[in-house]
Length: 98
Image (cartoon, rainbow, N blue to C red; front, side, top):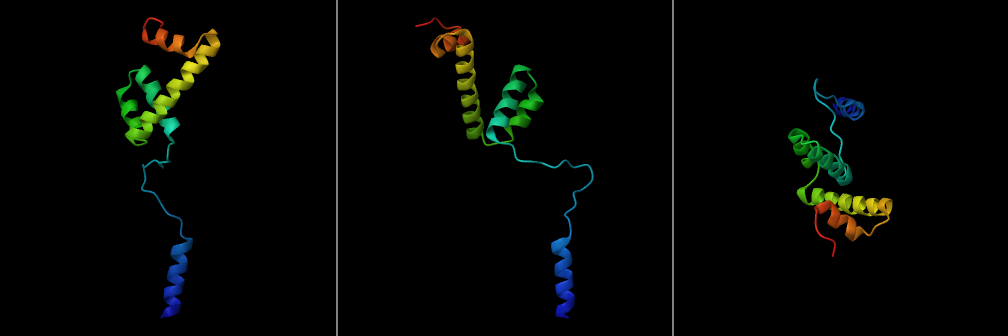
């Protein structure tokens, strides 16, 4: 009796899990992937992709990722333009430089 249980348990441990047909494997996305996908979808006004990217991480993580992306973009653009990050940020938002 115990031998049959051991054989059954051994088969369960070595069996490979199967996915139902037609389902995609979901992988975890990090917050920076989510932020990048979200911003690109916003720029392209693609509501379906906006919602998909927003669902990859928590709203707090997405907010942090978008903020970090904005900071990095402003710094990169400031270097490219040889301007201060403040001047670039004001210019991007259409604000007068202070």
